[in-house]
Length: 368
Image (cartoon, rainbow, N blue to C red; front, side):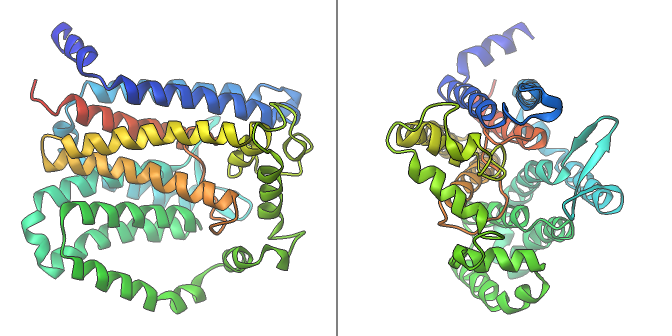
């Protein structure tokens, strides 16, 4: 155990770890600014204390992962996958409903969101399946199997309903398939099939989901309704200037004109209060994490490690791009949170689990 701890300390990717720690505390500061005036029970630190607790719990899980060789995690990939299938089914049957969506399971006083942990489970399961079956993926049947496994998760999450998370699962799958080296013609055929299915998908979308897509094209179609969020977000970001209006001094955020400012639109708080400089600092920290994650994937000792790291990077990258694009009105509002900043326990823990996977692959690129 002492020898293992010594090697862990020696080979840990401190650049990645320090960037994540700084980002987490950056998020705590912005979260406090966005929630201090209107918190639960009049307690200005309510959200911050809960987020900090989840952050500590996430780092504990991250630490545990570091002591487990990712090849051992691989053995339980099927159990992990079907475990989240059960949890997602339980959400549909027993889950707590909020604003018409049923996404949370309750354990005593705590709620958690299985769909967030399913992202990590999917990465582990696909990495195991694709690494073991790479030679068979030239067969179109085997190429379709990962879509079937991912599709089951998508179906269960879509029933909650949660379109944004469904798209995350699909993005993780496509990037991991590209990484493992499947035939490009298969990916092209998949893209064509996806485009062809858009009319059918449109028919099964909920009304509010259709409105989100229409309002992305022109938010002013409903400026006081469905388009309000994006309009206020763009005003907040645009008014920040280079240095921002100052922490705790944003008009949109402090006067509560900005909706979901501690979750979906927390980037808008950064843009308004800390300005272009604060946004660049945030993006710089994300760039370090994605750079180190990509480097870990390229230098992994085997295909399994490469796929695990690729899945973790894809998960974080997609959330960053979509959330910031949504806040700036460049992408449809999907409700995807921003890694390490947005309020939410399940999401914070899943982010740190993804970092744990990256650190684990780096630690074990050389056999101990």
